[in-house]
Image 1 (cartoon, rainbow, N blue to C red):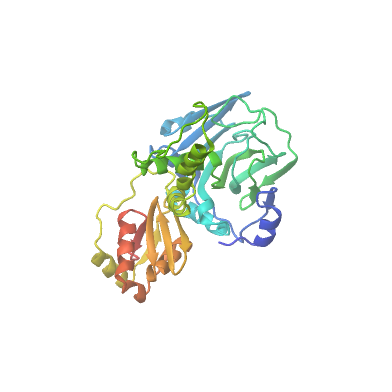
Image 2 (image 1 turned 90 degrees about the vertical axis):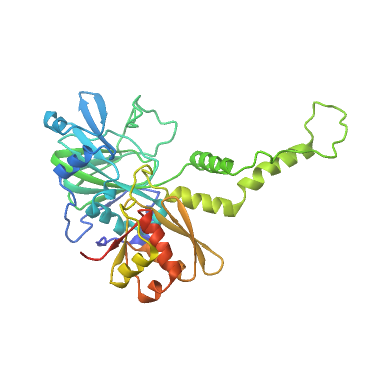
Length: 383
């Protein structure tokens, strides 16, 4: 499902995080991966994040899901849009849309949001803090983009939609099924459905803010700090002015703080776990029956392959020597030798065929069993 007539090097050099790019007829043939009715069904499910956006005159209204099925029969023939987040977690054909974009590292990929809009429907002019590829699935949509925004850009008093108070388009395109529009961070854009049955797939990329990183990292550090680890000043000498905080005390206090924050190994393990945590960590994907290592070995020996859970996030960080830290769904697995090879395969391939050499390794089988029992991997025997 590779993109046709698309030069990755040129895109990364000239467009990525710089300026929009229209990709016409991105595939030799386009098949819309989910129907409007199936999308509406997802919006009715309580565990799935969805929103219904309607517009009456100049007034916008947002209804958060789950939506009752009867709600769709009450809608007008125009000026509304349905948004379903992380549809790739539930529909394999939607998850497959991510594959052509894996020239961007996996750790940056967020999810696929799917929208359906009636004639005139959309979410209004807005901007995002992340890169997005907008794939037209059904119907037509007019996309307009403007000049880059920042935190000082005036916004409408609607925190749910992050709409701009003023929008001056500088470019405009009409997308048809199989077309793609890339929009960099902070570039305002406005998509409006032209006619009925307009579906768009938004592949978003994660861009953690400095504030988010500091807040979560410090919370993690706090969980592991000993309350007895305190400032001390044995050998204190008399000061000429008791109101002064001397340079030696400042240096010691600063060191107490920074030596923990600057510990690279601690940061590496924290970030790998932080970044691989599922978007919806409260959802339980564990199998009904856990498997022991011996059972996993027998299943793989009979030709089964490994499938990544579409909701799971995998990445690895390489260390000196032949070892890596594999991160999956917020957990860290230290891998060496043959488990390193498996970790790299899992992170780069949706389907992994485990050869006889790997199945002979107890460490490899134990790792697969852990990932299976956590719900991160599935075993597919083809039946």
